[in-house]
Image 1: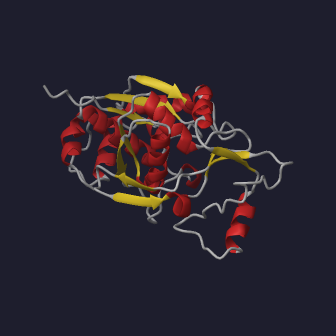
Image 2: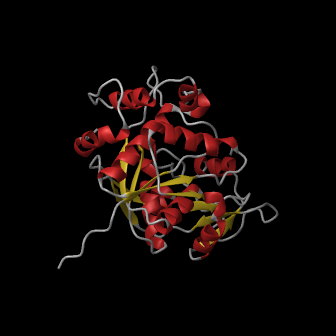
Length: 291
C-alpha cells in the first residue's frame, strides 16, 4: 500500500516591529487559505530576532488583527526563544569569522576585476583565510559549497538556479552583534515546526535557493514554496510599514466589519466576491487561483 503523503503544515511569520498593514494581512490570508484548503495545520511564528526593532505591543496587536479577520492557528512560536537551536545548527556548518563592514565589502568588490552578480554584492572572501581586523567583533560566515542550487515555486511554476560561490557568496549566518541571520533561522524553524508549505511574498523568491542550500547542508527536509504577489499602493510601490501603509488595527478599531476587509483583500487579487465574506468563503477560489 502506498503511504499517504504527509499532511500540510503552513505558517504565517510576521515581524513584530509594528502593526500589520494590508499587504501583511493579504499574505496572512493566503497562507491560511493554503493550509486550510489542504486540511492542514497552520502555525504563527513571530520573527523577532532583531530585538532592537521589536515593539512589545506588536505581538498582541498582531494576534488581535488575525483573530478579527477570522484567521486561526494551532501553535505559536517566537524566534527569540529558540536561539539555542540556531547556535547548534550553526556549529554543524563550515563557518569562519568575518570582520568586514558592508562598506569594506563594496569597496573590495569595486576594486576587483569581477563585478557583483545579480541584484546584490557577492562577498569577495576577504576573511576566508585570515581575519581582516581581529580587533573587531566578528560575524560568522558560511563557506558555501561549490554548487548550483535549484529552487522551485509550486504556485507560479518558477524555477531559479544560483551558483552559490559566484551568485550568493559566503553568507553571514550570525551578525557581529550576535543576531542570527534570517535565512538560518527560518530553515531551522520550518524543519523543527514540521512546516511543509511556505506561502510568502514574492520579494523573498530570490532568496529561496540559499535557503534550499542551507536545508541541504543541515540535512533538513525540503519544503514547498509558494510566492504570492505583493500588494501595491497607488504609485505601484509595495506596501511597507515604514512607508505608512494602512494598518489593520486602525480599521479594526474604527468599527469596520472584518468581512468587508476580507472582501477587499480578495478583490485586490481579482476575485469576484460579495461585499462581506469570511476567509472560509474564499477556500474554493484559492484552490483554483493562479496569479
